[in-house]
Structures are given as C-alpha cells and as structure tokens.
Length: 86
Image 1 (cartoon, helix red, strand yellow):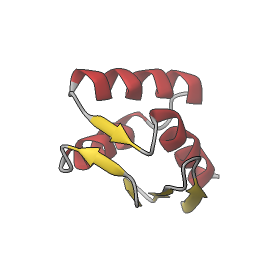
Image 2: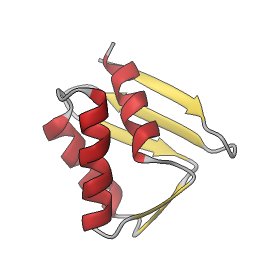
Image 3: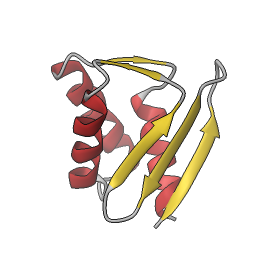
Image 4: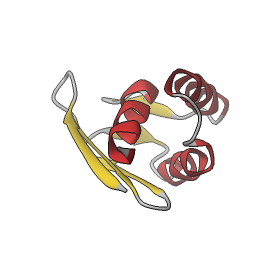
C-alpha cells in the first residue's frame, strides 16, 4: 500500500495511490472527467496482472470507453500503480 507521484513529460503531475483500491489524481486532463472513476475501478479489479499486459488492457479499455487522456498515458498510470504497490 503506497503512493507514487511523478512529473511526466510535458510537465503534468500524476499521483497514483494504492490501498485496497486505486485512486488517480494530478493536473492532467481526462474527457469525460467522470471516467476517472471507471479507470480506477478497472485497475482495482486488474492490478495483479503483469505490467505490460495491464498497459495493453488499460489502453483497450480507454479506447473502448472513448476516453481522451491529455498529459497522461495508460503506461504512465500502470507504471505508477506498480511503484505504489511496492
């Protein structure tokens, strides 16, 4: 259980907190904004998967749900989740 905070390329801040659930915050943009809850729920159910597979699944989920990420990527989210879990 932990927190990972990273300043991403482009200057956006990403904070991923892992307890029994996943919480994602920062100064990035997501459209529609309320989809962050869906991403957090998705990751909470899938976190135990190996990182490259989880990145692919999250990328597919984002595309399927028509979520636009600005300043962050599925890879950045997963990498920070894995750091928070250490």
